[in-house]
Amino acid sequence: MRKDHDIREAFEKIKNPKILVIGDLMLDKYSWGEVDRISPEAPIPIMRVIREEKRLGGAGNVATNLANLGAKVTVCGVIGKDENGNTIQKLLSTNGIDISGVIISKDFKTCLKHRMIAEQNHLLRMDIDPEPDSDNFQQNIIFYLKKTIPKCNAVLVSDYGKGLLNNTTLKLISDFAKNYSIPILGDPRRGADYKIYKHFTIVKPNRKEAEEAVGFKLKNREDILKSAEILRNRARLKYIIISLDKDGLLLYASPQNYKFFDTESQEVFDVVGAGDAVISILSYMLAANSKIEHAAYWAQLAASMVIKHIGVISFSKKDLLKRFDHGETSSKIMSSE
Image (tube, rainbow, N blue to C red; front, side, top):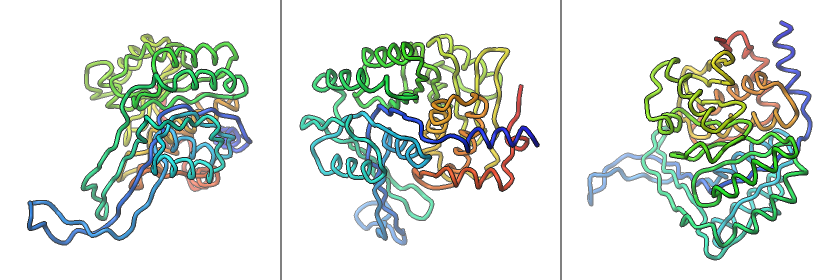
């Protein structure tokens, strides 16, 4: 089909767009093990740790996704002067990511998400979060953004609400990107007032984030479309994309212009990282001036791959093309309204 050829070519022909990722840097630690007994001290399982792994989370995972796709990635964020911060720096550098925008602060505690998993079951997640106070490094961030944004093909804001991005900085990012006609994409924090993302090109909440923002459950397509219109108007966005985990995603421009993209995944092991996959692909393709429909198609294909795995994973351009060539055509996973 010619349509499938166009979709494939739109993705394959992209070379090395320059993308700035700004957001909350996190370290994801995984302890994998087995449970075969209950503790005599309390009615809790005892997990025998078999292996451990550290991966980039938050904005770091998005940056890794983009680097694996072939983009030239610069990351801006804050880490503490601690062991977890050192690990984040090393992982970013190993993936070929420019860390000139990473600020190291002795007053900042690096964010850690420690997941303990037995077989396919999450037993516990332990979080270490920074204090939400960005005054000490805000001016450094603004200075870096002013000199870096004009050199980029796209800006991706990965906002987990950990204290890095305040309203002033978000407005500056939006104004700068608009002045230079650079697409700006946002992955919003939970509980956000979407007015803080005013004039972004795209904001991409997941289902729960959208529900919290509009104040009602997204039980069906009518609810989803209603929420999309409310949020798009609230932030005056060009598009809003809502990730719907096993139900795919919605690309929404107006009540007359929207598409639902269905997923082929029958089993969902873990939705962690699916949103990062979506925003990464969208940024990668819009940085290369791809059609938004093509970008949304590939974003959903990437999410379909991620939710079949436990934990945050990354993927390459070759992986996605291989998945496409093994039958994941537009006629199978795309539905329009």
